[in-house]
Length: 590
Image 1 (cartoon, rainbow, N blue to C red):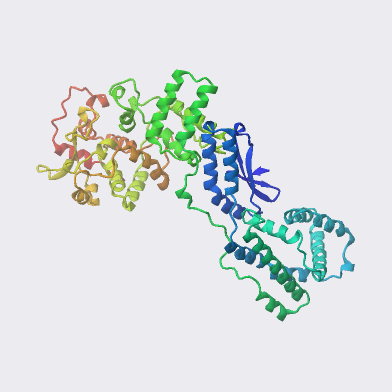
Image 2 (cartoon, one colour):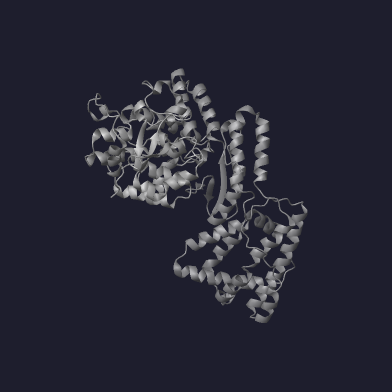
């Protein structure tokens, strides 16, 4: 039995597909296996989709199994296996038989066209093959043997074999034996039910109705084949009128909407079991437990708690990229912050945690998903921890003009207003993300002297915070913002400019998805990581390269003068907005 690549829990044995869910040994059952009774991958995938909610409940039972006794577990497992099979109703019978009967006419004409030899003219070497195929317990086995026989023949032999087989079938179809009430029809019924995923309950009324309708269908089939083989085409048309009409295409639909059902144990549930396992089985030290607690705290703040199998490599990549943005905890002001504040604050490059520390976060993530993949747990088949990151450097990268244009084009197409304007403000102000998210309508002001609007970065309101005293400043509004209609948008706001954004971490999580959608890579050709903060980095870099006065640029971006290696005794707070306008106007996206 081999796993089907890319399809969790789907296996194939010979030509038949199976559902296979491995169970931890402690439950006394090695696995739950269910034959899907189909040779077609597309049918198997539809059946797997329908079974997905039950598989999720099964995995949830495994997670909770530590608190349940063995007899209770065994009973629930049996109930779930039974539930994985649909219960037959009388309304299900006609669509199944109709689908079966659709091939009667085409199959009959194919046999008639091929089987034009007398049975006395058949090649003797095929007789043993016919006996080998006929001597099987089920139609499924006969199909498998037929496929094996064909595979072992040359092209020429294969055609002769099919002609001989068709001739034999024509002869047998003409034999008028009394219909058998023995194993033939019940076996046919069982195979038909298994093919469509129904439970076999031989004492139920729907099952007995199915037997009766199959008997009638077989009689019609025999009459149809006789008409075709005798070239009684008018009789064929009359018999075709007796075939069951298909009300709908026979495609098995999911029992429930998958989105409405949980699809497996949540990450938090798996992590609790993982931690218990590490403490009991591997004697996890208190120090490492505290390290785990710190990383898990960051995970909960950054990542949505989802079913364990739903995480993809891109989710892990976003988590690790956010970890690169975390501050060192042993320096002010971060050592007095809560984890929520550390995750949300904008951190200068010199204050970021080391890449080696970020690698520790990644190893923790790898450990959790490796546990979920263990054969005794078997919650996932592939770990999403397959990302590539450079854990030796921590340099932030800038965006090129071409990439900035891609962002601006994306902003024009955005329907959500906060996404539209947060991009443009990031590009044309060089402000920190946290400063932009907390903007209020009253912070958009007008300067009479220059007759220009400007943005006041302040902590006047109780909900506003600034990183340093230098962060309090005025940023002249770039003409591109005005042309794009930012002032018109502000006029529609009540108090907050971005009332939909309660914290900057929402933007941080969205930014990588935006970059991926417009084709801007997270890392540039030098291996430098880009994020929303790269708008600020790009703004400063471009203006410094254009030779604007450094002290004026510092006032626009809220840096201390010493940040650029110039004496901090230089008094720059008194510079007028007029000088700052020149800085902002010098910024262009070429």
